[in-house]
Image (cartoon, rainbow, N blue to C red):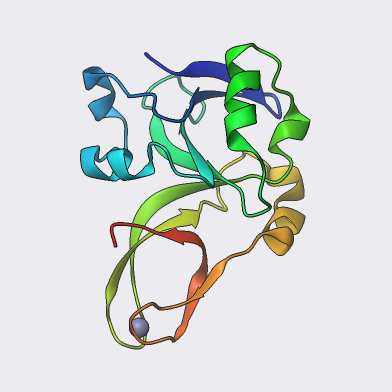
Length: 155
Ligand SMILES: [Zn+2]
């Protein structure tokens, strides 16, 4: 496994710094898509992570997303040198790629959406969601999306 195994809020997460590639065996990760991963690899507002639920396998593909202008290049350096702390992730939300269908125009929209069922950041998830800049409208028709979307992808 590539990436950097770090602890956030007591949970292990595999963190990929900007430009770092997953290995071919990582394609077995749930939710991994090669072209989407290429699109997200050097994104200014997010970093790709692999998470687990209870067991070490399977691993789930997701992103940590910031909307507060956090310097993720500096964070990459802290992670690589083992100095990253929970406070460095105070503005982050865990999101995953998913297709949502607009209830108004039925457009299928590929998004990164916050997984509110994940244990990561569960203790203060409500305030994290309040403080995060979310995408509220369908890009096709402008109707309200009922999910906590942080980015549109594949556009
Ligand atoms: Zn729509």
